[in-house]
Image (cartoon, rainbow, N blue to C red):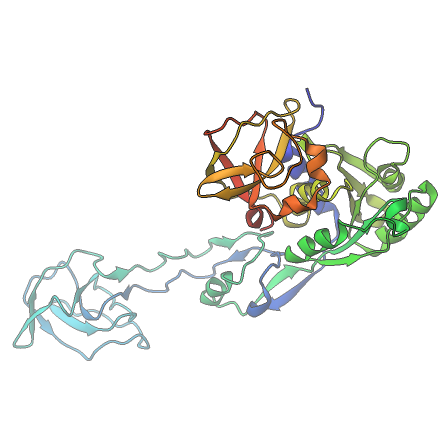
Length: 400
């Protein structure tokens, strides 16, 4: 049985660490809100809409009045102020216009029977073709909570509330750095930093790719301390296992407190979260293999910088049987989905040959080609050919 917590537990830990990072705030106009996090709630000061209004061209009536009704008054348009309703009358009204006080329905023009200046039918039920006052938003209602990651579509609601600017947190400064002698010496490429930095930027923050650091404990500690002083979040890759050359987590631990080490997920298992109190910063140590680093980034870094979230799930049919190495570890299986069938990338059913009928997370972790798949199946149980399973697209994993 695994000693590490599952994805949900580690995501909650990472999201909680966000509160330890000091965040300045500022106001931005509505055309700059996409991807920004609200620093204070948005509360409606008045109901929306401010009054009842017509959804059809026609005649405003009070359903308690009997027919026929005398048609009186000029047409009410969307720009007019709300007027009062005179009992026993019907008032011409345009779509979007404020309903007269005392009226409670609209008879559509195309249905109305008008004879000699009187409305003779049909009868309308209360609320017919009317949007009620406060039906969109109530006065005093919290419309967007503090911490909400805004989307461009929220601008329509904010404008409706009379807001021209909102208070948001400034983007976090995130330092991204690879570790390892082979990467520092340019013997092997840094296959992690650009992907991690790109995701961080997609999540609305500023990412800087720093120069790789060799596997020297003293050098690691010195460089990481300098980077922690410059950034709110420090994301490293490599050196997170327990081998003789793995010093990254220990170096970060020298600078703060290890809050979590390990996650019951492969690839991605050797990840660590470190609170760097002296620097008002947080460190996340990712495994160095590219697919493991990616999985750990969406599982741990995303909730740290963007808060807890839920994934979008789709269903597909498993293309083949697939055994898993051990339980109850959760496994991330990259899949290609074709005509409703999910093909594990790397299996004999796929175009990439990494393993036979038993999943090999270590081989998958080292093969960035599998990230060209459609998404990931998260499993703790073996796959059976023909079963229905859930998968989540990469686009959903990378969204906040």
